[in-house]
Every structure is written in C-alpha cells, then in structure tokens.
Image (cartoon, one colour):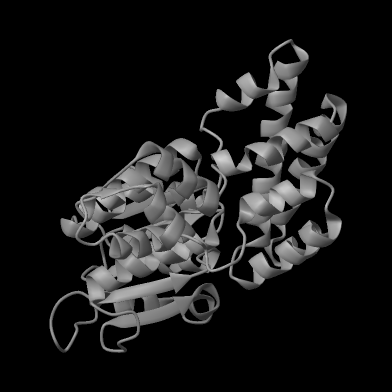
Length: 329
C-alpha cells in the first residue's frame, strides 16, 4: 500500500481501512516514531497500557515465538472493538511472523510496528510496501516546510491561526523535531485557549522549552567561542530531554546558515541587508549574535566547521547511543 506522511496518520485513524492489518512506522527520528505509534495505539485501543486491549511485543519475542503475532492478531477483546499489537524494533523476526497477516490468513486487530531507518533494499520495507494489508509511514528528519505545515495544521484543528513572526520564533525555539514540536503545540494551544490567533507574545510566554535558554542560544555560544557556556547549555538541554544528535543537527544548520550569509557578504552585500533578508527571518533579539559571529568567522573556517559537524551528525545517526559522546567530542 502507498506510504503516508505523518500528517496523514490522523485521516487513516479516523477512517481506517479494514483491510489494513499492519501500520509500520519507521525512520531516523525515534522520538517522533514513538509518539506517532502511541497515538495510533491509543486511537485503536483507547489506552496505551490496558492489558485487555494492548499487547506489547518486540523482535526478540517474535523470534522466540513467531506464531504469537498471528494469534494476537486474531484474538477478540472481551469488551469488543479492535485490539492493538504494539511491536518495537521490528525486523527480520517480525517480517517472518507477519506472513499470515500479509497473505490474509490472519486478520481482525491492528499491528502498530516501530522500526529504525530502512533502506530501499530492506526486505521488511519492500514486503509491506507491496502488500494491500499494510500501511507504511516513513519518518525522516523534517525540514522547515514540513514543520511550518505541521504548525499550521495542528493549530487549525484547535481553531487557532498563528502570526508569521510567532511561527518563525516557535520554529527557532523548538527546532525541527516532530515529537517535541507536537508537545509544544499542544501546550501552546492550551495557553491560547479562548483566542483565535497566536502572536509573538504567546510563543514567548508558552514555549520557553522549560529551560533558561534554547537550541539557538547554544549555537550562538558555540560560534561566539564561549566554550564554558556551550558545555553548560549542552548539558542542561540534554538533561531536559532534547536529543544530543538533534543539537548537533541544529549546530550544523547554523553553520550552513552563517556560511550562506558570509558568501553573500563576501560577494559585496551589506551584513545588515543580508541578515534582514534571511528566510526564515532571524528573530530580532538574535541579530547582534549573528553580527558578532559573522565578524569572527571567515568563509574557509565556516566551511571547515560545516564539514566537521556534518560528519558528527552522520556518526550520531548511525550510533544513537553514542550521540552525546560524539557531540561532546
């Protein structure tokens, strides 16, 4: 079956296709994958932990007992309705166990499976992509356009619009992590209850991220050469729940942004003109920080920093458990 984007999950859950027995959510954003899987399980089963409506499995359990997946798929809830079979770390054992579901021999409930990044050559991905009884939802790192659309759609469901400058500030503070943005949007919608529009002051009041500074502050400290402040901010942000790999990614994007600005300035544009023409716009309170950094960093050094950070981001994605150590290095 055709893949859907994260924004399409709500539509499927509202009007599920009864022929679909497996929903596979995979990619390189573990927090977002877990969040989407939890939403699907709760919509189907009405709970995340009711033992009568939710069964939790993983690839290891299915390797030991492959028949269990089909058994759970056909089991009947004592209270009626569909049950959710929530599978973590889906891999080869899951694919073997899912054969009766994919060929139509087992049906009834919904399997919600989570997996990491899957190459186009992945047997699991190919089997489910080609099956009319499966739906796949790839979750890869969002770009600014994805997050902008997510903000507008999520707030619209709550009857809210958002001013452009407020949206840019929200994206700057929260970043491009879908799961974190979803939580901040829910909090922002509650804060703005009774309003019909969200402005800059609402974002400033609601989306502080629970810390005295944000990912943008960390990037500013790094590129201003403030080593001790950078280390302190990094530690606090990681402890607050922000993934270290995500912080590396934000630093890399910041380096690329500075590189683009430096290229334009070296080509003859005025710094003020370049910064004011940035898209998305730079929040006015950060203008002095950008001016300072552009005064410190020549183009060749920014290019070297971008290359180093890109390599670190790749290493962190391949070794998620070592992301914090890689970032510290």
